[in-house]
Length: 410
Image (cartoon, rainbow, N blue to C red; front, side, top):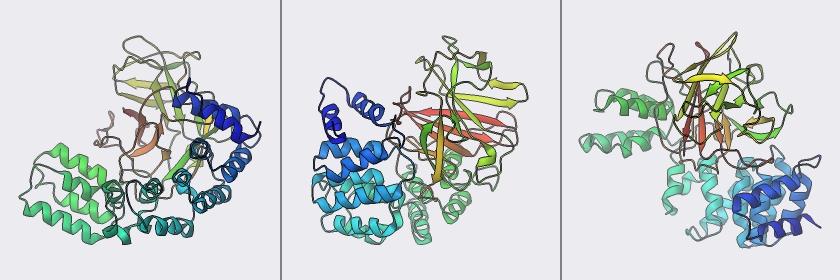
């Protein structure tokens, strides 16, 4: 059976949910030596079926690197003239500027919401907004315009700030949120300068963190540069996923189920200076008593804040195996200004968070300072199946105190 036939058979199986179909395809492809890269690329180069292309491209986007193969697929989908071209949207983070400009040209010939190129343009706005920004006046899609905020010029910052002031500092801070989402030094300086004009101190802190600066220092709200993550097999990357960090783990206050280590980053293998290997944890139960896990790494293991700790439990898993995270440069180093969608967002290390719901950064329970963002882990598919939770986890790290906070949004 060819890969196209396999994908078609699973994609058409109405007895399975979409999530089950995605996982079934991944589990068919991932055991091969190249994680199914060759087979899924061949499938995408030959199929004209929009449904097959959609499932196959979703799997291809789970694999790291492979920019030449992803470019071939994207160019083939573009030249097909078929609705299947929308599947190229998943490959945008790996495509060169000249390839993306070709997609932009195609989209601008018919920038309607119903166009199959709308999904491609949406992801270009997220990952390479500078390529679409010159044509903003020709684009009616409001979601795409939100993406173009990222890295916008100083003139837009000044215009937003002046418009807000002319309105008398209206309580609706949507305009200031848009200003903050520009996420440049100029945008952060503008929000910082308005501390006495924004009535709610918590709102000012939320906006300043969003703009990229912590409120109690001149430090960045995230570690730079930004990196994009892809899940791979255990030991294939120094950044480990799954299992326990030691004998004692944070536990649920309701049912006492142990958490699982979602991610441990290897400090020596990151492009920023960290004094220890940050670890982030999440609950293996569905009790939902707390929406965060806060721990301090110690020489003896961990110290848990706002909860209790108990024995680890290897039988309770939310990471589908002992895995690891491969990192590669993130295309948008300013920070994506579009809202994230749980289950459809990429893993990220460094940079600024792509929020589902914009929040101020947590404060370290040791030193009291606002904590910079370090990592996000989405609940979507991996080559080994979906993660065992719904939503997105956001990890923050105080390197001075070696404290991590994992927050949950859905």
